[in-house]
Length: 93
Image 1: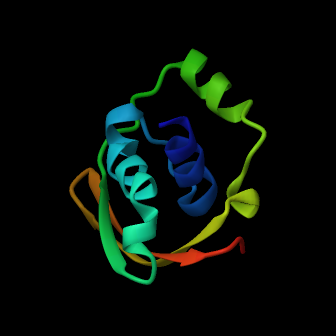
Image 2 (image 1 turned 90 degrees about the horizontal axis):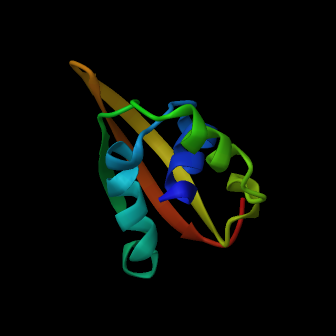
């Protein structure tokens, strides 16, 4: 979950809470099945505690060190929720 929060923060510059980052965390968990596929993820929550944010920001990894690449294809905003269209590719950026 922490990696998903950090990935959203680095990739699209949006802060996500645990529930908001859950779709990306799930996609990362099954990334082998999703490679090359276009997927849409909803990000709807930015209610994160300062303690959790400190923990996430202390992670040593970042998007440039991941064993896969997330490509942002576009985004759409409806109300407070945002929908990101991503593609997962093999190997780092």
